[in-house]
Length: 271
Image (cartoon, rainbow, N blue to C red; front, side):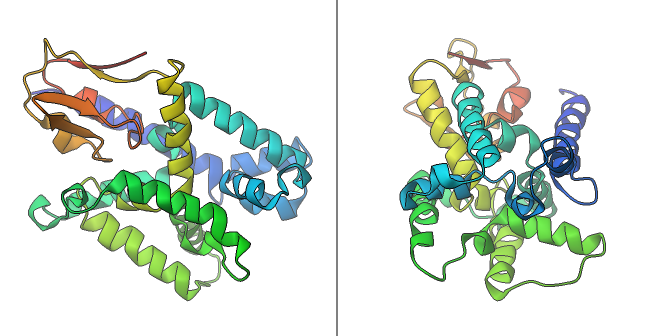
């Protein structure tokens, strides 16, 4: 049996780095923005979020934004085009948290959403909604964001006042319970409702189609169709269709779980 400890420790280290980078009390990214780039504090709570400037494309206000936000968003898109959803697969502790949380509940009590609904279609439909609904006065997309909920939860743990709006509480319940504990893979919120993840996968899909980004590939001559990659993929991006194992680029976050669990070493990344 393959030793999973080194791989698990490597993944965990990446997500812990993401935690230190973005969350209180460390917030290295915020401190860098404030201390080195002299960005104003009012901008900082949303410093890393690419959804806000992307939504401003639809309102016509993209180039009226803070120049740091514009450039950081353009760089983020470029990185996703070349490397794929690196943030989801390597750094986003909000997604990794529910993935880990899901191991508490036995698989027989979890939902395999792909059996009932077209996950990818819903995912990108929700992304479009996140982009367009801010045009409707009174809609606050951040209140429905798992990243924002996790940030608020961590802040409370480290001493901040408990201040959750009703929409944020509902989002938190969906994120941790229905789409976390009781969803196979534990990343239900990532698959359905996370705008950051959908944007990364959107650029990854384009990059893979253009031959820029390396994607998951399966060596059919080595693959024995055991299904371990399908079962272990937290995003349920792997599937067996017509006798072949396939990876759905629209959902894949390149976390490496499938290739690690393959007993024949048949899964790799390539262009």
